[in-house]
Every structure is written in structure tokens, then in C-alpha cells.
Length: 80
Length: 351
Image 1 (cartoon, rainbow over the protein chains, first blue to last red):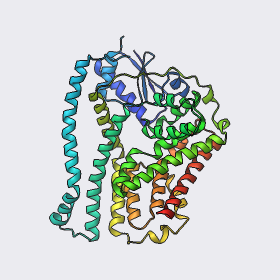
Image 2: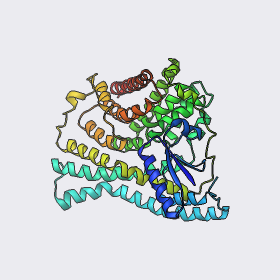
Image 3: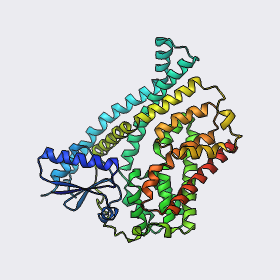
Image 4: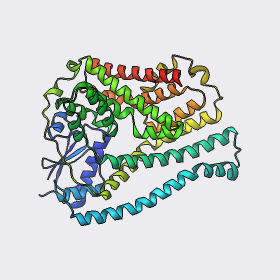
């Protein structure tokens, strides 16, 4: 699973990154988490509300920072 | 879409179980809000024995009463607004604003700026997303100005502190500033001062098309937002209320009236300039502003101070510098500042 956190480096984005890593660890999934700060790339995904979460090139979340539990269910729902 | 959609029956069942606890919380909220003043009157004056009318008595009573009142208002407002906002998205807003040029477009942009969920750290992607998709620069600016300027938390706190007619004035003047500033920027033809990469950005197809959310999910988003915002702003609130309490208890009755009364035309510009580097959120600014007003600062001046604190902030300008050249950035700050000064001065004369 290739995960990208889209956001220009604000506090919310770092929180989302941290929680995503936590959620991955909890579901015991192998995945890489990468921060994307380039506005061109972010908008290339059609995202305006940051932070956003992209899993295997699909946007699954934008404009908010959910709890770790919700992230877990989002990540488990992704067909791998 | 990646999340499995539950069958309708499950959704409805989930909804019913989500509304029940909410009703209890609402009832508790109303009871606390109604009893707040008498509770602290009793505790401070009767139990602790600080006399009503004494400096310490007034300061302590103000601090406790105001902290609880603001806390309750914040919880209520953030929750309701966040739940309502789960029905709107930035993407949808852009669709609504695309291709509009007339005054209607500006008015709509101001209203949507208030209603659309969006944090100030998204200002840059939203700006790029709007402008690159062909939303006119002026309309985009109106949206970006209205969003922090007319802040739902501020509206409620102003209403709770100054009365709801003042809150109405605040909303009306705030929307007007956003519209006029956007129209001015649009008319000036400043597109060449937008960083060129903005126009070259290729936009991906709007992600995350609408998905049916259950009420339980909306409530849970609301709850998370309440916890998140309170955790972020409580130091500001306590500091604001604390300073307010000191001013309330000890500053002489007309201390500020001598310097910042309605008859001093320089008070409003001074307050606005002072407010730009002062970066707080509405929740911290309002107790302070309320106390200043109680000690003689004119209402227009007080509101201008608050608007300047919430609408013009240095961190946001630094972010926007990525997409706006310095001259456009300066024009933006200048137009908004002039608008706030005009509104504050006008209110001082009229009221």
C-alpha cells in the first residue's frame, strides 16, 4: 500500500501523517507513508482541502483529520 | 469509493442510536447555560465571600462566569456548524462559483466563504484550485477574505457578549467588506501579480464525489472538531478572559474612553494596525475586546480591532505569498484594512 499525505506542512498535515502511521501499525499493514507538499501535485489529485490522504493513487479523504480508529477502517477498506 | 456502503436499514438504525445521546447532551447544555450566572454569583459572593462590587469579586466572578459561558457557546457552535458543513465541500463551492462575474457571484462567494469548511492552511490550495479552474480573481479573493473575517465562532461570541444586534452588524459589515474588497481587486486587473505557476497548474478531476454519510458519522465528525478546536484554543480563551477579568476589575471606568472613545478618529486605524501582528483566534480576542468596550472603547473601534485580529494575520500572509506577488499581497491587506477602518469609523459615528 502506497500512502501519501497531501498538505503544505501545516500542523494538521503532520497530525494526519502521524495518525496514518499509527493506524498502519495497528492493522499490521505494510505500507509506506510519504508527505507531499508540492501544490502542483496536490492539485493534480483534485484536492483543495488539505490535509488529504491518497492510497494507491486514490484520494480517500480530504479536508479533515479523522481519529486513528477511522483511519484504520479507511485503510482496511482499501482493496489491496 | 473505498468505504463499504451499509444497507439502508443499518443506516437508519445507526441514526436513531446517534440522536438519543445527542438529545441528553443538548438538555445538559441548556441547563448549564441557564444556571451559569446564578451558580457563580452564589459560589463567588456567598460561598467564598468576595463581595459583589469589589474589584476582586467582580474580576473572579467575571472570569469564572465568562469562561464557562464561552466554553459552552464554543462547544455548541462548533458542533452545529461542523455537522452542517458535512453537507458542503470546497469542490462543490467552486462549481457554484465558476463562470459567475456579476455582483451575484461576489455575494455568493462571500456567503460560501462563511459556510464552506476550510482551514486557513488550505488557503493556498483553494486559491490555486479556484483561479486555475477559471473562477475570477476578485471572486476568489472575496471567498478568501470572508472565510476568516466572518467566523462562526466570532459571531456567536459577539452575540453572547455584545448582544445579537451587534452580531448582526458584524456579519453584515464583514460580508460587505469581503464583497467590496473582492470587487476592487477584480476591477484593478491584478491577474499579472498572481504567481504564474498558478495558471499553469493542472487540476485533477475533483476527488471524493459525494458519499452518503450517516448522522452518526456527521456527529462523530462534529465531536472530533469540538475536541480538536478546544484543545487548540483553550490557552487563548483563558488568556483573553483573564486579561478581560483584570480590566473588568481594576481598570478605571473611563480609562480607555479618554484615548479610544468615539470622538478620537485615530483610534480605529490604530486598533486595526495593532490587530495585524496580534494573531489570536476569535475565541481569545472577544473577551479582551468585550472588556475594552466595557471600559469605554467605542463599539466600532472594538469591532474593528477584532476583525483585524481574525482577518489579517501574518502567518496567513506568509502562506499566501507563495501564490501572490508582493504588490497583490499588499493590495489585498491594504484593501481589507481600509475596509475594516471604514466600517469601524462608520459604526462609531452612527451608533
